[in-house]
Image (cartoon, rainbow, N blue to C red; front, side, top):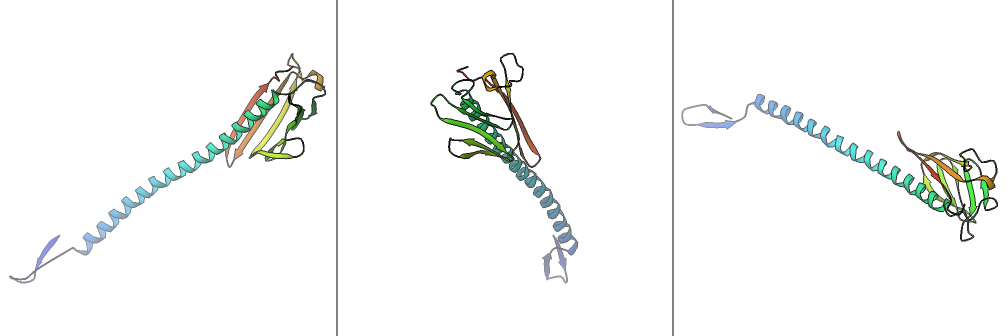
Length: 169
């Protein structure tokens, strides 16, 4: 701040135009940098939140399929549908149960209708194996069921695989 004297007894105080312009430019630069830092944090949080949701839904669906497939009552006639994208069976409580995938929805069969189990599932396949690891040709030969599932939101992808052995086989 400068003091400008116009005469011996009178003083005025103020900023020059150059000082004000320099101050505005410096505040603008600092504000721009702060805004970029804040936006990176917001973007990181948003991406992390989407990934958490993706992982949560996929893990929950996989765990439920594993748990219920372990409850298949018996080999053979109790597996009623056995395809690459659909599995239906009778569980130990004689309840019809199953899972089916039609992109992008994974559904659970409750005996009368399908309920949505997870969304954003871009791939799902069931593989049926005999005790020796060879692909099973009939329901009577199924010993293991492999589940391979891919969940995707935007460019974020999660691939999960599991091998389940029903406990009554």
